[in-house]
Length: 98
Image 1 (cartoon, helix red, strand yellow):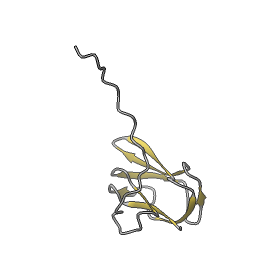
Image 2: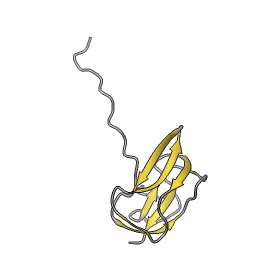
Image 3: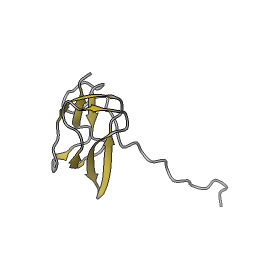
Image 4: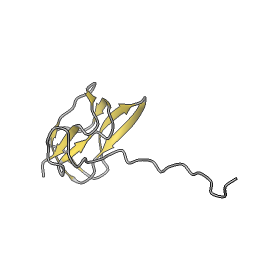
């Protein structure tokens, strides 16, 4: 038997900002889907001012709900998804105005 016990991997962050968003949006302003799934809730609208960590939408993937949170403070310029929409990994969900 080995002395090192296998510990569970730390949870992956739910929100990612891809280096190259799928639809050509600026990487700094895009909020993208970390995994493919279906949007089951949208919590903000275009023009909303959000704080880092605030819930933006919920993505269902592999029968689990994943809350997509704002990676930084800012104003949302556009929401590119709606409830019931299927999304691909790295697809832009929302964009910051700044």
